[in-house]
Length: 285
Image 1 (tube, rainbow, N blue to C red):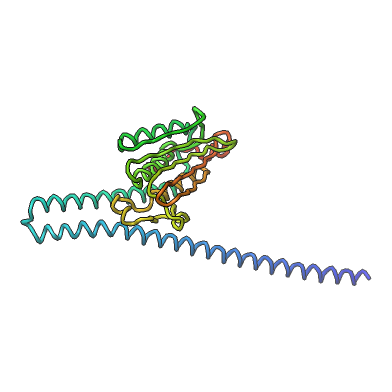
Image 2 (image 1 turned 45 degrees about the horizontal axis):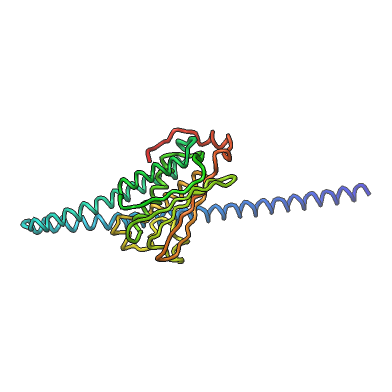
């Protein structure tokens, strides 16, 4: 009888060992397949990013090259044509400069997203960015509504100002007539909600899901004329995500657009998170 139980126990042990081994092998194979899929997705994203960046850079370079060839082949062009060519070349250079700057910002956000965080006042950030925008676009009107005189968040002030500035500049660029922007600051139990609303061109519903994709533009002709490359909202989203927040957009075409950023209040940030993010920035943004 004892021998019988020993044989049964041995058989069960061997069977269980083979079962565990097969499960482990399947798990390793599944993990390897998932890793291959993830690597392929990253390669695809990187390939698309390089292709889009190359395309955006090629356009102004082609324009500048064409004008230089014209000036070489027509050394006795009129002063008016010469001035027009210089103006268009300068505009193309500014477009390239803006694109390269945006690409560097995205690279910094990807590689060192946690530098320079501190106790910030969101009300002060909104006031500062609004004042700077009005000084550049004096025809614009910004109305700010808030209930709290101070809203404390844990943030990188420069990056948060950049995110808000991108949203406000977009509202000015795509406005109809004199730009009118409404900013509402709302505080919930756990978050600070920033609503930025304009009465501009609006966004078609089909474009809303792709609005934060890199290099995505709703009206390519209008964006190109204004010097945009479709990276501004990607930068905004990345900044908000690095602050453990969320951003969404809603719009009615030809009527209005509203962006809503939601960021955790300072008291919701743990000491561990503060310690992890309290580092000197490793690159200028």
